[in-house]
Amino acid sequence: MSTRRHFIGQSGAGLLSALLPLSTFSQMQEEASAHVEPGFEGLIVTDDEGEAVRMRDGSAIVKIKVARSSGAASIAALSEVFHPGDTLPVHKHLNEDEVIFIHKGKGLFTLGEKQYPIGEGSIVFIPKGVWHGFHNNGSEPIDMRFCYSPSGFEGFFREVGTAVGQPFVQKTMEERRAIAKKWGMIYK
Image 1 (tube, rainbow, N blue to C red):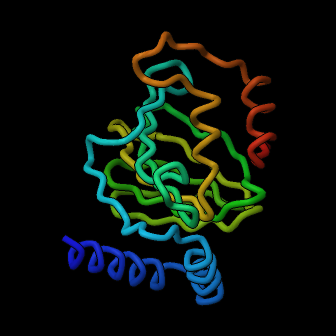
Image 2: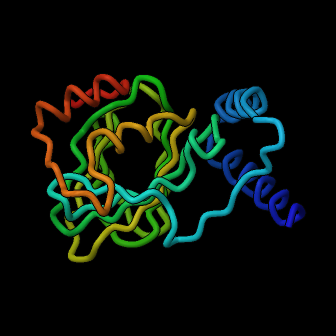
């Protein structure tokens, strides 16, 4: 099992190094090695696992897969499905870089001041401080995976959403803005 974990860790590092600018990847490696807990060997999370949080109108589910609370200080990984017509409002993170992988579906992504078509297999790297958002303008759901570095921002989803199994409490946009600001995110 430790060989498999080592392989997964090495594979992930190889993928990130191919996607990120060298300076960003080197900085992430330094931060990761500085935050490794003694005895932490990593973890494997299946597609159906994760801490599930209901968002927006209660029909959207974010799954927190890898988090600071699970021992990962350098990165958090999550998943979400955006239904046709759903929009992620344009925003920016003041503290985290973000990587988004489109597993299925297609839509229109805003990055900085431009819009780009995205589809299955698209990967978007968003450095902290860059405006971004997207709209599912297709007829199929967008199934996406996304990571933040460093970890910690996953707390935003816990606070703005409602844990699956609990009565859903929808937040107003003003409440969402206040919570976002607390977590270092600003809506445009």
